[in-house]
Amino acid sequence: MFEKILSLQVGSFFGGGIGSLLYDWEQMGLFSYVLPFLLIFALVFGILTKVKVFDNKSVNAIISLVVGLLALQFNVVSTFFSEIFPKLGIGLAVLLVFMILVGLFLDPKNKYQNYSLLGVAVIIFIVVLVQTFGWFDSSNSWMLYQNLPQIIGVIIFLVILGVIVISGDSNKRRKGFTLPGHNPIIFQGG
Image (tube, rainbow, N blue to C red; front, side, top):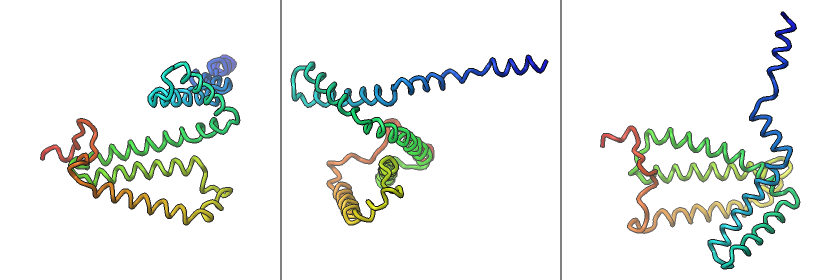
């Protein structure tokens, strides 16, 4: 009896279907080389086609191919993509949960609440970038101290730019940020 249970346990576990598939793809270089190459190729090809630097799509494809292959030459792009996309996914999940929770109580006609939601999205984006580049790791802590005046200057400039954009002519601006067909649950009675 014990031998049958033991063989059943060993015989029924093969490592899982999707986990094994993802591991095999990782070993083949799909995530390190193929997907980053396709992303770079598509972005460069789309930009060249949209800007119409060359009217010939074959030339755009060759340039995109060369840029994509050259970008993967030293493993920097692969490392960057493997760092940023998981953290970007976490940041988007946090933003989605925040939008769902705030959407219950947010009045879509109040533009200041909408700007605060946009501010939270920008803060999450900045946190994802800082985490990805590792600016506050112990090995890179010198960068903060060395570049603190420039960082403060950029922050002040962005705040001033934001104030200018927000205080612009209200007739030329869109009235708040709302999702199409979005009516908060709390404020539907008005």
